[in-house]
Image (cartoon, rainbow, N blue to C red; front, side, top):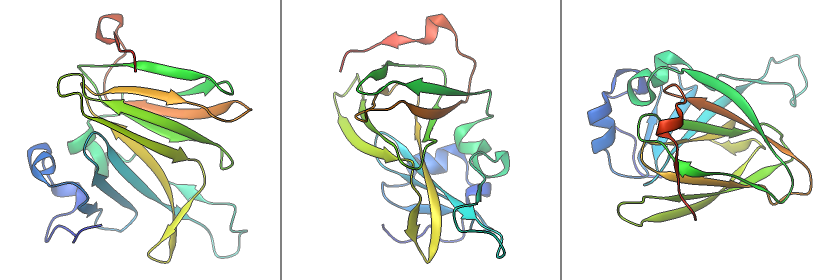
Length: 183
């Protein structure tokens, strides 16, 4: 990752300032519990896995959506639901013009293959979104992604079993704002 943004925290950056940042520049919350990094077609979020000192390490709490951190760049969390994708199946294959979506794999033992495409520029990106915690800076983090408006997305479950995906949106789902897109 590139150098941190000087004198700016996630809580006090405007959408315009965030959009003008280059890719791969981490932007942290003032308390260090969340980091957001632009990655071209998507934004990557790392949420600190907080464990009580007297608890097992596999028991933890992650603040996955906090309006204080994300309101200016994501917007208000309007919908939150869980999508269950059966083994070797695919979900989504569409885009929205009026809201962003945040995705997180719920099961620590599962993963999804995510394909993203900008229908206007044809730019594409592929990534593996794991449920397991990531370790860096001497801490454990849960990883999520935000897909901005206008970016087509496809979620493929390469596993045998069903994968649970937590989805948070910045706007109400409306049938006229779901644009099918084959990838």
